[in-house]
Amino acid sequence: MTFFEQLCPSTAEHGSRTWNAMILECNRKRDTKGNEVAKVTQDAADNEGKKTLRSADLPAKVIRGHYNFFGLLAAQQKYAYGLKKEKGVWTMVLPYKAVIEDLVKDRIDINMGRLPVGTDGKTIGSNSSPYAKAFTLFDASQVTEGKRGGAPTYTLKDGAKPIASTLCEKPTYFPGKAGKYDQATALDSTKRDKENSAIGLGMLQYRYTKAELKDVDDTVDFDSIYLGCRVEASRELFWKDAEGVVKKTQAKDYILDEFVREAESYWKTSHFTLKVWLRGRNDATIPSDLRNALADDDFLTVRFATRFLPHHFNQMYKSNVIQYYNFSTMTTNDTYRHEVGHAFGLDDEYGSHKKNDCNLKPYSDYGTADYQQCNCGTDSKRTIYPYVAVSRYVTAQNACKENRDCKGGEYCDKGWATLGLNQCLALKADGASCDLLGGKDQCKSGQCKLSRCYTPHSVDAGGACYSDDACKTGKCSAIDGAKGACVCKEDSDCRAGQWCDAGADLKRNECRAKLDKGQSCGKAGSVGNDHKCKSGECSGFPKYECK
Image (cartoon, rainbow, N blue to C red; front, side, top):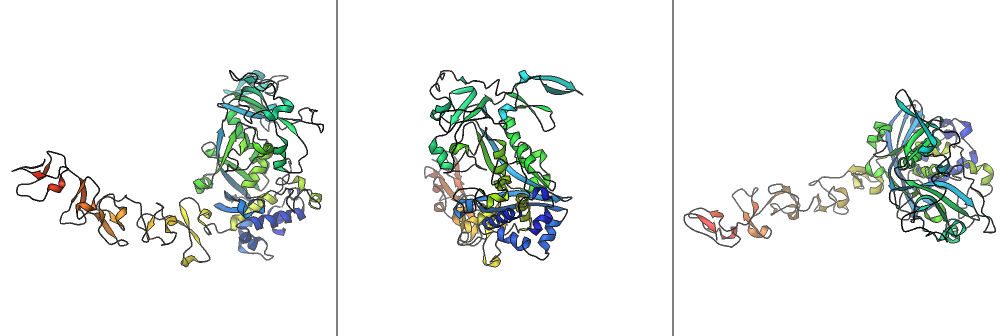
């Protein structure tokens, strides 16, 4: 705790020392790299690791590991991110593959808040969701365009109405689907499909069933009618940035860009900058040293679907087998903040099944509601979370326990030479030695035979080989396990429809396709060439041909 407060000196962002200690203890225990970090940061004396973390400048490094989600080993999740430090400020890059899953083709659904249902189950309250994006976006009819220095400028008209009041005041059905939800509005919208697939444009509704609410948390005692605003994916929309400048975008672009903007702005502090990399979209904004250091399998896949997600609008920080569509295009900004925290390698702090649930006393007395992983609705920043992430800079990232601890193109070497300090090494090319047991994981080809990496049927005639089935044709001239060349000695060494051209130089003997009728199969006086022909007969004088 003392070292954290030295490294992150802004007391306004410290929060409760007691709860920070709990966060550190729990996250270190759940982290596969936790013990390694703790040996540095918990040492009362100064050490090289602390000196490293205090350095004003540190080169780019990729941090990889796993943490036990909800404290469960069976629910282990990976984290992977790039880190560097310049002039006392950390830069962290979270790599994502982001996909819009338009389950309703060419449409984007935008959050439009919710209508609370009273305890009587019949009373519907008014929409009081200032975070709803449909109240901050405007269509072209509400904007005046101008120019400044040759560049277009945009101004909202007096009394401009957001798309929640224009494009989405009511639903418009697809042809042939009109009236499908006439009996499934408001209180009865549990009867709709989560995609609201009959609606082409305009207002969407969905109400979660009691069973869905119970699935999330037994303590949930409220209900709501959730609202969405459906627009064309290519629809031009306008929004105000933090400086009040009106900007133009398209609906599909807004969803992805807002994810980046919201995550980066919330997690930024005086000594920490977050860069969210959506590969193929904002590559140019990512520092090249960190961009080049991250591997393909470091990227988290996130899928934004045009639907109301299951489990009472529950979201997950990456796509997975449990929830393939981990985000909705209607996901709220406060959820983005929290889920990005998981990409840091942070666990949830809430949950009625937990003894250390942040909502329980005495923990709630420590102001836990101001902590993002306890309450995704908070605007408060707590530097304990970035500290957990950046302190992993001291870990030895080439050490491993399993292959999954290594990046793409590497395997975890668990040989006797590195016992106790297993290393991530580059996958081996064909011909390199591999272990008798488990050796296939060491080879680029995924195949190991007789202690050699190889690709079946890949070596041309005359090429180096260690086993017969490495050859495209013929056999290996050496005994299996020793280096030889792909050759043939007789027709039986070749595949069907081939003959062995066995010359004096056994290193160059090759399997050739059998000859058609009329093709030359020998010279005057030659004998024993019948095997070259498809017909099995080579004869004639003075010119020998296949019959």
